[in-house]
Length: 637
Image (tube, rainbow, N blue to C red):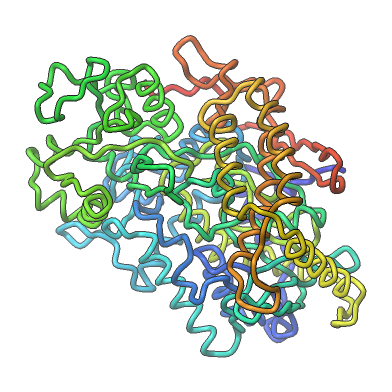
């Protein structure tokens, strides 16, 4: 298989404009003849569905929640990037492009990243027009703040609830189209398979989560906007319901899965408190603007932080990275926090935490000023830990947060399956081996509002479509396969709950495929996951029936997918014998403990093809070319 990324020729700053001009258009009167299925209603899905309907297409929108307002995008609190340079600190499209390519450790496509930077300003304008209440400075201009991996302020924010406000904007645009009838919205539907007829993605099979009925939805193209797969680790900052089923079932139908080992560990999460915890809570990266990270200089120091004098504190990020200080990228900050804890400098009951301290910022500005910027985050921390972060430093520790891997897509955001588009976190395209903060919202909305609506039109205008009725063999086959899988799960009647298997998988993943990975651990992980998967299909106990509301059945199906995906993730991590971004192979590090890439061997996108159940997946490679940002050892010193 040859991977054609379809990157346009010409100077990077003109690629997207030239591509848009060269793409075929659909006559406005013909758009109503096409139906597009959009799965997922987070920022990417809601913005895509609304934009496509606004253009005149018929849209079918599906969401496994009862409302799009519950999408996990709501949890992205810190902000959204755009290089508008309101602060005159030297920002530009090119600088955002540069920071993103470098921050991703040179494992992203240049052309995609430049386009992302290019359209990000439009995203802010769109959101302002929708009424998103971005923070403003005294003169009325939109305010900015900084995030990790950048030395400019380019992050637009709505206090500590940016994701929520952006989602309300996208949701209201979607709701408008639902009201006009251009979007048919279906809540509580779980996509379980893709229907591929005559080589084209033409529909999906979904389970009605309330009645248990299997339903088919047919159209001319399918868009997956279903988020990432961080919950493969069991404990993560993702919403508990976030899952990988849609992209995993597409993978098993022939879509390539790219860079599955690129997992982001976020440095500022509330530490795990006990064995019965089901998820972790993220404290926004924006807090690193004003908070200073430190540990006691003395190992095992159990004193109250207020009793530890200034000269007995190690502000290790400021010491190690004087240029970026506390705003080093997430992968660097996470590794350093783990390193300090591993060396015995951790704080709190478990010693797996470092301090994030606002005392200096409160003294420099005021408590009111800090509360204005981050008040709801401070309230959340207080609710969870019963500690007042205005008086006592927050305790933070890294946790799984985002997945840069996902289904492989070309420049048009289409997978290798014709008509199957993948947007937002569900694809692999823009972040390389590490995502910079405030770039997830940027990509989700850029894909949905400003990229997909153009590229999907070219596909529709240049493709012949045969009729695919309900009686089409591909529809019957996909429905039958889904029914068989559900029946198989229900028939096992074992002794262990699905959650028990998920927890066991998470422990294997975190121990062997987490922040530090090595040859022995990865080999062990692959063996253990394979054994756990086998045991799952013999001993899982799924209560209830298929024809009813059955949360346990939903969970079991998702965990079955996580077990397979976890194995692929470990395989990809084992194959990539280098360190880059969030993928840290302990055998490959510099003398200073930084990630050491091997550009000669691994400067490519690893795209895995499902070869059949029980068979090893096939690896395909898309070579990455760096014409504008030449790869070098990342340095934030």
